[in-house]
Amino acid sequence: MVSRVERGPVAEWFWTIDRLFLVTFVLLMGIGFMLSFAASPAVAERLGLDSFHFVKRHAAFMLPALGVMFGLSFLSPRQVRRTAIVILAVSLLMMVLALFFGIEVKGARRWVTLAGISIQPSEFMKPAFVVVCAWLFAEHARQPEIPGNFFAIILFGMVAALLIAQPDLGQTILTSVVWGGMFFMAGMPWLWIMVLGGLGGVGLVGAYLTLPHVAGRIDRFLTGEGDTFQVDTAREAIIRGDWFGQGPGEGMVKRIIPDSHTDFIFSVAAEEFGIVFCIVLVSIFAFLVLRGLNHAFKERNDFNRFAVAGLVLQIGVQSLINIGVNLELLPAKGMTLPLISYGGSSMIAICVTAGFILALTRRRPEKRAQERSLFRSVHGVPAE
Image (cartoon, rainbow, N blue to C red; front, side, top):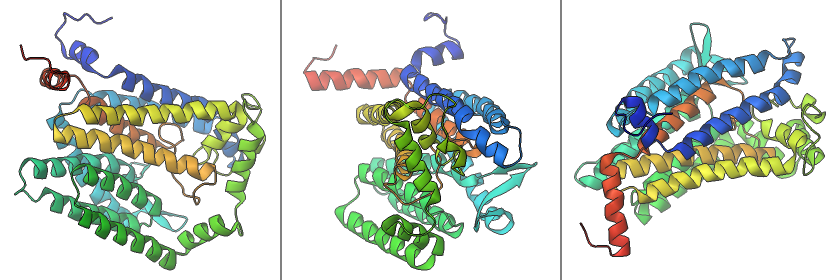
């Protein structure tokens, strides 16, 4: 146990970190590791691999991911901003390289290989993009003569163009929703809301008309015709699980879901552990988002407020898309469930997001003074 009287960096970190956030992130990682035992062996066997191939790799990814999360949580807000700028610059460069030299999978170029390891740069771009845009919005709010909002729009356009070029419509929508939410918090004029909303609608129609795989997924979602094997099987797994599930290792439908360890791990959880377990899992994600927004509401510093809100919104919207696809409420889209699904780039990138959140929500002396001042102003308590 770390004593309150100690003043070392670890002691300072321990007594200032939001421990509920920390426990929530670690809990989700633990649930993801548990579900990898249920979801991945069947996939590994179909590929001719050892039954626990993906379980072992999942465990191997967890170690650096935890290291990244804990390491970043020690940073100050200024260091978070500087780290995000570096990550964003490197990620954007790698996204460009992926278009020309990347690995093509199912018609998309989203991965690059470094030292024999496949990396998806867009996953690391997302948290860095949120933090950098939060800084730009905050700078404009602090000094209106600084064109922070304009630079944020340009940056968003660059990111969206790279994502569309891959193509990755799901990540484009996710990034757009999060960026739009932050811009709204920063005081987006209603004219901009209408203009950007209109451009978003035009973009979706354009994607439907020009990208055959997007049109196919939307048509299958609306009509139920065509190759709907994955979503139909996922729905069958959820129905078979009923309220309390078939029990650990007893799922049968999960064995024929092609991406049961990644995009459809939620359906595996429903079949083996039941709808009640899934409700608990959704509640954990909801708690994470609501606690983050509560932190943002209390925060006086614009950068911290926009960044924390954007980061938890990113986790929340990504979870919503993944779960919505599993429940057939949204068209099929390959997007992982944060900290639950298998995937090295996704897990480590989400831990970058978690590390940034933990760093920005720590109770620093100046932050505690602001909270006391806010409490006095709300409750009419005179200053000391």
